[in-house]
Image (cartoon, rainbow, N blue to C red; front, side, top):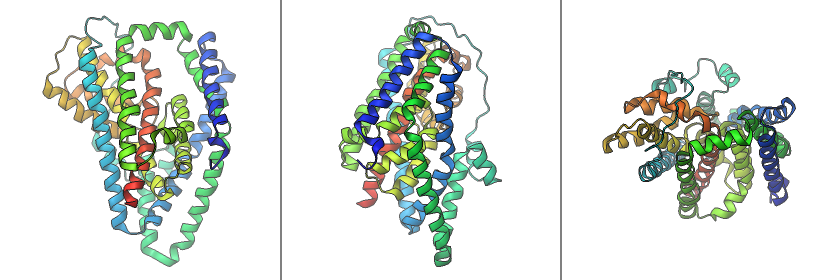
Length: 401
């Protein structure tokens, strides 16, 4: 292994942290400030590294590729991969929810009111070009940072020899950021413990969680089964065929990032760790530096699958018949809405409003799934990160070929 965090022992430590966190939160049944603080400090440390890593890695990725035609080819492969895998995930979810029919014949109180958030694809496009890049960095807006870094890197190549010191500077920034991330990862078992314990405690402990799980049992099973098929069958087949890699070995290499994704429920916060794991797995730095930041922002396989299942579940709950055409619209809308979902906890709830409104389903139906969403959010985030990681390996191999 290239660094100590990839050892089997360290993976066991993270699993123990997650297990002990789950037991602690389940027994105590409420938030403990000190335990919550452990998780928050770890999460903040990871978030702290997002901007310097993304900015420097994107610039280095573009300058390493050099030829604009090669850059365009990599961008084309990346977007195509993201669209196809997201479409595949949504289709898997649609098939399962029609077979299992989790919302038929059950009665669930809608519960909390759902506030409708303003959301528009035009807003996403408008936000790509920032008025103030420093403000975008401060707010953690990833898309404008990616755009500026791409533009910056392309112009470095155009300027040529005079801009080489700038390229060397950002190479130093990237190496320093990477080393800082390695040090932060060493505290992952403690951070994972704090995050899992505080979240399960906030949910009311084991008995409250058990009641939620039973009440939405078939719905939860449908979502988890769909995510499992995509994560353990669809993506490994893609990895095996198009990246010529062993899915088991690659999964083990990504284990640190996947456990962290589960505990943080944020693909953006996990990004520094994902980049480290992918590079240790042998993916070219210029490829991962381009593919992963973009993936953490626009590639949401798990979120898209969840939105499709949830939309049809809500329709079944209200006794509304969904036609084949409407289901096709849900597939397309969920695929596109997932692209606009930020890599933050429960962003899927916001973008799902688009899916529901498109086919005329009641938005307040989201309230029926809020009780269990915090748990499912962690699973779908893990699938999102796994999809990004597989994508980086696939694109890397395609560019070599």
